[in-house]
Image (cartoon, rainbow, N blue to C red):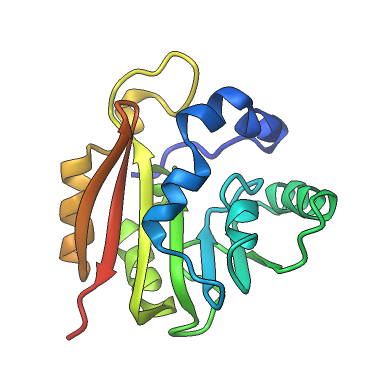
Length: 191
C-alpha cells in the first residue's frame, strides 16, 4: 500500500484557502467530538492542517510525523499562532512513540496510502487510544483529482480500507464531505 511521501518543500500548499474550503477543519473535527480535557494524536500531522485547530480545543495534541522537516514547519506555524500545547513526536505510524491508552482521540489524514503495514499501524492506533476513544481516518477517494493528491492507483477505495480497519478491531462509520475524500469514524472494539 505504501506510495510516495509528501514533499516537505510543498508544505505551504497544504494550507491554501482552496484546500481549507474543500476540507473545512472545524466541520471535520466536529466529528471527533473534542473536549477541553482531551489528549489527541494527529498521526501523520505534517505541517499541522488539523493540528492547530485541534490545539485550540483540547489540552494536548501529539503531532506525530515521520518527517522532521514537516514537524519543523509545524513548529514555526504553532509559534506564529502562539499555540503551546503541541508536543512534536518524530515517529512512523507502525511504531508510534506514545504510551498505551494515552490519547482520547486521534486523527489520521491522507497518509493511509503511505503506510507500508497498515494493519500494524491500526494496531498501534488501538494501543494508544483509550478504550472509550475514537479516531477519524480521512483519505482520498480513488478518483482522479487534477489539483492534488496521489495518483488514483495509489488511493485506497473506502470499502477496502473499511474492511481492513474492521478486521483490525474497530467499528466504522463512513462520512463524506465531498466526492474527492472520505472519512471513517473509528471506535475500538473492546474485547
